[in-house]
Image (cartoon, rainbow, N blue to C red; front, side, top):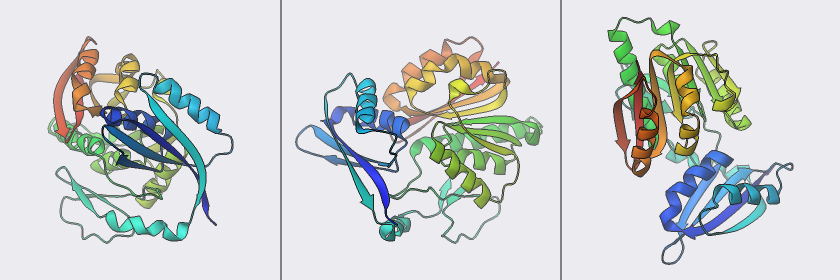
Length: 298
């Protein structure tokens, strides 16, 4: 049976490409995004989302209008059906990838000969239009490995630690953290399909306990829950809006990793979070134009 999708086609000034991609990626959690330059100074982004009869075109137009109110754009929305017989074509581009020192991300259909020290995370992204491991995720994995190494050097029992993975997506970070030894992980995302994909990937990695996946937002995570480690790979606007809540959930001597941040927006995010007494910037990692930040609480 063919799958139904909606295609949102936005055309706007290319100077806003990164901002628009980040905002709409967070709002719509698309199955695919295609970017094309159209004429001098303009860009067209095609966003593909699964068809939901309860989400009208008018609702989508209003959502975009509210969140892109500061730029001019043209928007077209159309429904179409996708033939799953062609769905496997993109899989040839998703190969095992080494991230950081030890983490290897691989799809279930690819063979990988594990080497000593490898932490292999099997991921089926559940996307019909292609996949890839974004620089924001890579940056978090690099910092997470360092956090785990630091805590090991401090003779901490990793299995007793509690971690929050906010904006979990396909569950890559939560599963990698579990395989590094972190014992209690809550993975949350505001998109139902992302949570379902995370749950499927947890099973694919033969994990039977230690990770709980929930459809939730940062705002709705219980305020009385406290975590030793918090990973938040979300757009800067959401990070800044929730800075007080994130700090409140962070235990003493806790680690907070923020990602989804364009390098040009880094200073703004750093300033906002350093306004919080008891939080210090420990390290930053920049990959391409994206920055990941590691803060520690006193």
